[in-house]
Length: 514
Image 1 (spheres, helix red, strand yellow):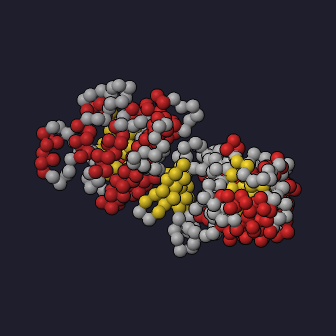
Image 2: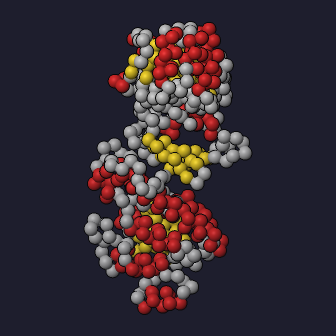
Image 3: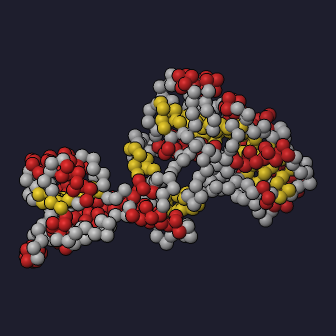
């Protein structure tokens, strides 16, 4: 039977009702600071922590519960006669329940322009210490960190006058999840403030659940969607769904890929993605023309795909989109008329994302889980350094061709390797993604382009070790090529370009994507 409970909460959701339930069952309540005032004001009889410790709160509240009369009451094992004898001799009474949630460190650091001092002051010390002590002694102490557990605890107390061992164990587990998350946020914040070590010797990451998914990549796989804590401008986690059924695992993965590619462009641009690869990308003077060009790039693959646009969707564009089935459309905004048209289709997901073009923050991680480990790298934020471009062929590209080449390179950067993109008029004509050899990727892209490839440009995510890709490009009427260069056989590709009068430039920057 719980006889004494200690309550000290930052999140006071439901705490008054819970405390009243405890008091009604004869539980003595101890409290601190703001929680003491909240409960007292609600007419609940509360003992101040200072009356238990015999020592006043001090140092602006930094020290109040760090005392043997608190921790002895939490850590004494009730079935250990020596423990019980010791606390009796020391005048320590057992505490059978702890209800604590911590200083709002996360809420503090998420505020704009927060000062380091304010963040430091919101690092809880006594709370985690009490939580860990109570959780370690879970068989004797019920420890509650989540207000959603109040109902379960009250029900068990009313039905059996105690909290079951199974529930106590689950509550203890939740404590360590909570304190781990809390400490990880602190470490992450301080690491970013230091700004010296991008990859620490030990890496602890923390995420918060957004939703349980119906299934993963396939129906037999379970999946959950988590988000990072912090400012997530321009990310799928920040998008507001305006219409349609909930997002699936594959929807989120594809939408993320579309957004990553869209961030490469500042002019009105539409990106269509299917199975994590771009299938139609186009830029224009307005979003309607950009969409039409993206659709015409590959009318077959765009069906059932993801569309991302970096301008508001108007009525004219919405009517054009509505002619086919797409899974998702993401844009910074939609006119009321556009929403009326698009929402006629029950299954389309309409996502509004402010700051859709916001760049990925410097220092962000790209992670891939492998069996037994985790691969971590910096996000690939660069595409081409114009100052490092080398003109390696006899024929040099003109300014218009250079624009087209840079457009194509932005797209191929986000295409699975080996990847080739053929483009013209700031429109993809063919995308050859994820092939085990580069010539096959080139042939796929060229085949998609068909007759349109005459006068087009070609981009490759990595160098050409053989002249075969140049031969295929020449046969298709390609006039200019952009690639990283760096192969021992670069000269063979250069010679092949010279043979066919094709301009080729090297960027010196590879873009493998696996």
